[in-house]
Length: 209
Image 1 (cartoon, rainbow, N blue to C red):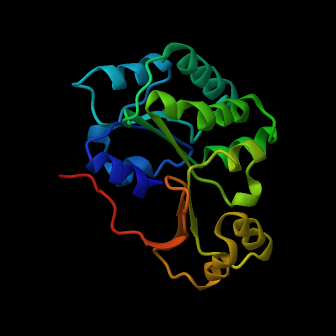
Image 2: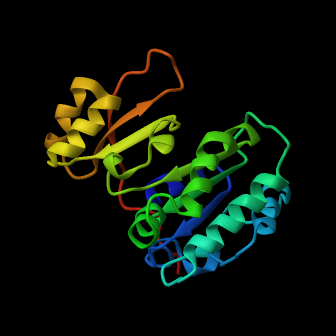
Image 3: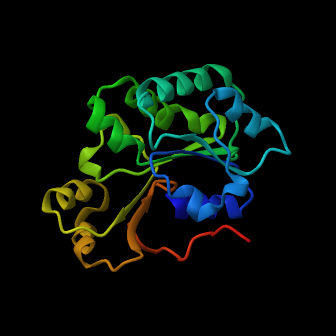
């Protein structure tokens, strides 16, 4: 997820991060990260030209109210933004959030309902959604069927490879052969989409002295 956030950030697009992983500050630098907790902060990032391009909106690494906080914020955001846009105005990055929600509250908790809604509806307002999970097989059906782009790192788990075949077809057999820093990707931007290998560049952005 840090790779995705970095690439969007480099293109001068705004990124808001919801994370259960404290290492974000170490990788990207505290000088550009602040913590926020309301939809107003997201809306301000969209509308304010002077707003920083990258912020950790909600540090969920130690939050005991992750389900309630995230559900309330996404619900408020969906009710507040109604201006449609074909351009990417804001990318919401959910790093490690889905797996924590499922582990603590089950796959039908309130936040996952709003995540499903965000993946399905937010794109029409110019708001992108990127999220990580332990595997495609752990995701709910509404999430799996509404992704436009799927990026999968290497795995030898046979059950996960079989699930990945729903996206990548016979190319899913490449997953056990991928090296570190490689991924298999598919984007539905075109009707004749074909899986392709993706080489992730390292290292990621670091805090500047």
